[in-house]
Image (cartoon, rainbow, N blue to C red; front, side, top):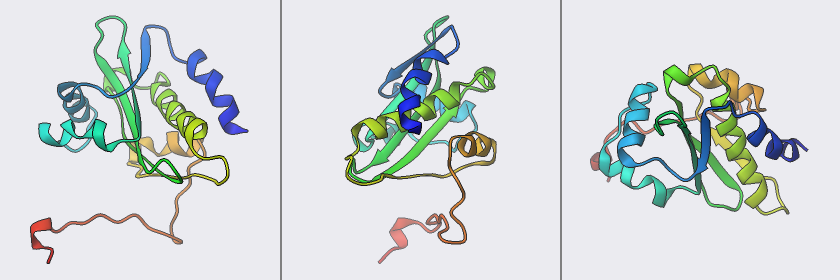
Length: 159
């Protein structure tokens, strides 16, 4: 039921002056937006791989100067597992509902494309500033049942 409402809200709630597009920003735009939005820096070679390693992505540009001001993508298998990543909005464009529009677009795409004979498992890692947005859209913390973890030792130390 939630996903049925997403389609119309994606097109009607985007503020004027912005355009949302399927796909991924250019490598320089991706790296710049991550930096400006306070996400961890990545290298150009890492950014080059996002379109090949992602299931779906979208980004928002400003009609004023065509600059990339928001993005999000999904990593997943297309069957049941989907992880939302790289949610970022340029600080000068925050508090306008743009992050909500990107998230709804990502969720709508999962709803439209995932197999209908099973529920998709949709995850994300929520930094402090994004938690309200994710909670508003139905995400809940998984602890204590499960807890996100990250590998902190270099891969060259794995034997």
